[in-house]
Length: 414
Image 1 (cartoon, rainbow, N blue to C red):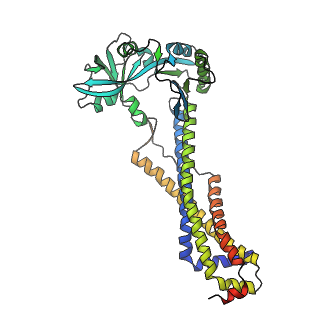
Image 2 (cartoon, helix red, strand yellow):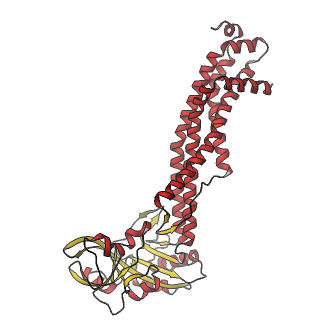
Image 3 (cartoon, rainbow, N blue to C red):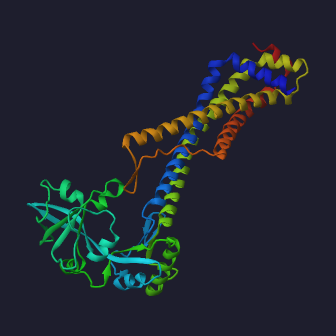
């Protein structure tokens, strides 16, 4: 019986090629959108995670306030939430190579009569050299003996001001004159705003000109020794600082480890995947409406055929199964084509993204590796199952209507 029904279904689909194709379009577009968007976002997420494993895996940062899901909660940016005492305690933890506190402040910087508002960093010269991996393009790092001297980022020297800044030139920071002793290498990428537009001066001098408390620091940077687990050291750092602050359980700071960044990236990409999948699912709903419309039309066109089938012994159940199977097969075909199309579109998007940027930039580091669509068997099965289910559900009411037709009335239908 099933084979006979399948024969009738395929014959009807073949007889109405154009209508079937137009009906399939809604399902194809919906499934392709879901697969393409979800697969490409998973591919980018995986690419980011792989790059994070290679990116400064020996660095940990401590920020004031609680950073959860990528947003700062209960920030303490205007309070001495982090102090030099915290830096000292962290530096004593086994596995910590160097710990340095920095002060960050937005300030007016003037050069050759042009004034811009930039971020100024107060640093410990010796510790900064131990932690820095970018290097100096011209000149030198700041030294302990320096007072009113500055090390500037690449963009500060060559891009932000109308006239290029060269070594030994003078700049004014909040009205105080500083001599340029070095220009850093270009960082580029997603962190270029922070690295290439930075101006670094001695921490003690910064405290004086901005009137900052002696023990206050804005951020603590930690470089761990080779062979030590960053996650374990991060947990130890959190334990030490929360005991010092007496805020265990309600920390007023956040420890940023490579694992923490990876977790935040996963949360963001998961949320993005859900959102994009939800938007794309609307197309599936539209596709289902299209199938329902086609099946209703099919019932009207095939009323006499239904009457003939019933007159030769077909039951209402068989008629209902015939139309449900037909709509389900249409949905299935749409799902299969949609998966193939979605894979191609997603892969195309990733290649275009790569070519347009000439590289994939992950936190300022570049890779020549193109991320590829990440589609596991569960996504394929989900796409096929949803499209088939949409088809079956869409065909249920037309099928029920067809099964309830009386043979005599159906045969009289013109």
